[in-house]
Length: 427
Image 1 (cartoon, one colour):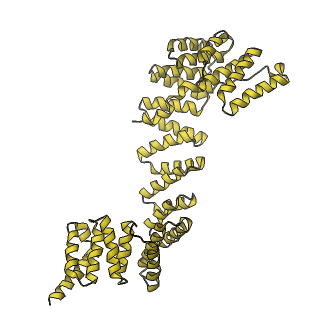
Image 2 (cartoon, rainbow, N blue to C red):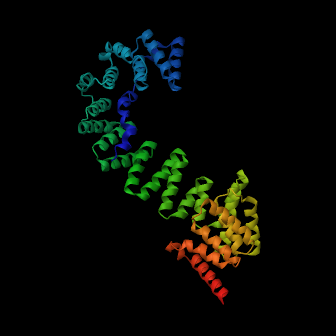
Image 3 (cartoon, rainbow, N blue to C red):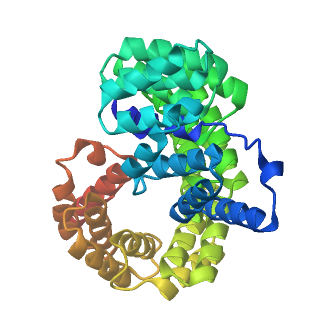
């Protein structure tokens, strides 16, 4: 189940040994000269700015000129880590110096492993292991070899030996990968949590941990992780994930607080304001969004939020109606979303502001969504307002098949009013 999680770490074992080489140039003072200094600086500059090929060639030239193994080690590391050319040529050159440098022997073993020559890699590594110096890089490479041979339990043993000495993220991810292949999910979680406790959140470790918490529905754990990941990366996707999580848990107030604190997208804030029925705040934000890019949809939303706020407080005054209809009339078009067409149309009908115009707008909405129960109800209500109650009932009957809609308070009141109108007409 967790193997898809671990794809991001599968390739790391091929190169991290090379990355972890710790080399110190001991003979720097002896070789010091202006030309030499400049050449060394040039090599390091290339490496610093990510020009691995140029850096490799400079280090290789330095080795050929001065026969200092450190430069050969650097050239070989850069070649393997960055998958450059001349790997075989360098490995051939290295063979003459392997007994003088454990680093070169280790890198040569890594080259053999990457070339699928597992037997040669193991032979070279055995020579290093015979020294019994407990170098964690040797343990790590031994584990890498076991992974290549699908001997995951043996690999786990050696990764642990290396990890006891150097707790790097590369090693951590290798351990996670092997635990995943062995389906030992709890061990993955414990390992990631311990590493996080000691070293804080890193992007890779905490994303993996978040995946585990998500599968376990560990909501409180996820909340903390998303906050840490946002602080670590500044990536709003993590804050958005936190908002979505809180919202699905019914913690909408907390979700809104996060959205405001981390200044998430205005659409997210608007959605949360609406869900919390904070219509005044939603109206203000919609108007601000309208002023920013002049999208008429935001003015239409502001009109709806203004009316909903008045309805909530039972304070739908003539002033409110005038303000709302002004916004609608300024922004509504025949191409507007049917939701807005119907909302404005029903408002004009229900408050007897302009019944015929309202019915026309509802008709435009129905042309786009002819089976929408709410739009049919609005049209029926328009005919009722025009005292054409037969037509009103005929249209409203199209909604009766949906028991939930038919039993809603608004639908019931409309049915009752229309039937009363028909009864009076027969008197």
